[in-house]
Image (cartoon, rainbow, N blue to C red):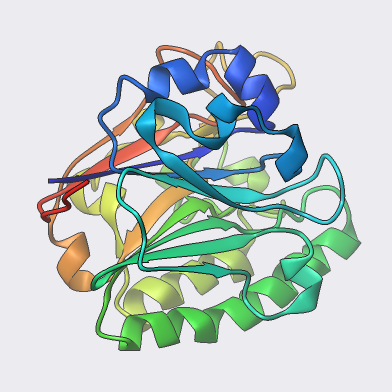
Length: 262
């Protein structure tokens, strides 16, 4: 059995203070993908670099206190791929891939466009370059799972207030259509939706810090594990952890019926 966890930490140092690494040590995870580190390598304590007998690999942003992704694993990867080969976004630390035999696990932090028109334009640029990259991964013949904060809610059931958000970043028609292309044209599998096709409020993984969004569960599903068809069909259990709050996002765990010797 392969257990994969993904979590946007909104700052690894902050999440650590809130107990994320302690929780992680209790999860028996094989691979853990984290996003929005908001830290450079010298900022990481030994526990942050290698929690729970795992080894960490990181792709930090050039800008301090910004973005960054990481992968923790119990098994040494055969290869690590850092970045996409596109300077604009590689400087932001948004893509890290670990290969284990025929399995590839990716930690992804897709840009948010909510802060300005400029950042929305950057988000669309990233989507344009990432779509063919996804096609290449899909055609590789490998088992691939891309874990992370995709910053898009795909369907109306993926957020509480979908009617009032149709013109807002994260639920724009163009963004949702882009995700549909991944699923419908390229054949990728939304593992959570395959196992929970009708779930609504239980599926949310992000809550605004404004108002009482967390208390009222006014959330969005922004965090996904998107897999190639054979691997997606092997997803047997998925869960969003909400008993503790380490970040404005909640960790998403998926178990796959796939051998993975740590």
